[in-house]
Image (cartoon, rainbow, N blue to C red; front, side, top):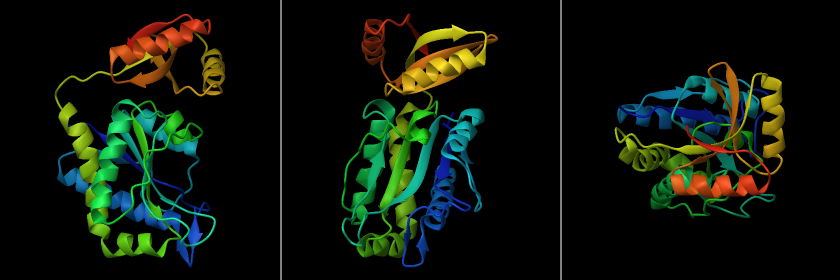
Length: 254
């Protein structure tokens, strides 16, 4: 069974994102998100979108849409921007933690995009972005070149179909080997509450320390789970770290 992927077009509505010479990030991201989704659907992947028109969504809304959709992977599409035009050029794919499935997917996407002439600016960790921090599934954010780089815009415009195909191919390369294998991810449960407000308080406390946290419904209770690890060894290491901070822990499948 193919994994379901949600594609997020960054910004939208009154939030234009970055702007350069009449060009708006929200327009580029929507056009590219729909094209990437179409490529994935052609490859047999079920696809969901956070938006398909010019509407505003808070980043937390985007994460909530993904979490409520029951999808397997989250990919957000953006364009980068620098302080001055043509200061930088290249692509990046951002992750919350540079490990596991997100790191694999980020590098797979970058490796496909550089074939089109983009510079590879790496896989930075960004723990302040809600779409990476609050999503319950492996998540990446693609910066498809600098919107104020004439070099990047030329690649984006002249090879648009190839750019969409490259992102889709990177996603497929990263997740295709997991199809039908029963691959698991692991987290560390640090609290189980009857009241959602108590779970949310603990989640906010842990997020302030830089952890990726989710709240999961479990038989009428709210479970607070830290991390999204691709191996039991990584989950055990995370568990030891949380135990040292005084949390009661339990490794769970997520």
